[in-house]
Length: 97
Picture 1 (cartoon, rainbow, N blue to C red):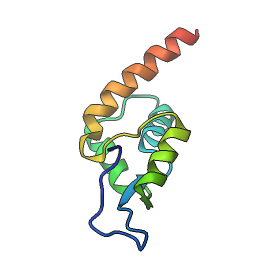
Picture 2: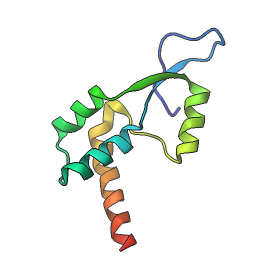
Picture 3: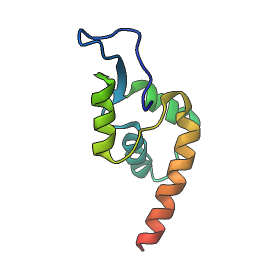
């Protein structure tokens, strides 16, 4: 499963999941670039806690992830996953130069 399910289900019977819009990955990357330095753990959690989310049916959320080309960070493990992702993004920047 790509996303955390909510306990409520819409009339169609499909479970709902929360999806960050924009993605948490993109949000953190943009804010770190603007800061010009790595975000610290407190900043990452603060950004996560203030970020916009929408409830989507799981199939729709999976389709969105597919169209984005990546699965977004898990909000419960965002600090650890962000550390891995930012290294990948940094090495990708080095490859472009």
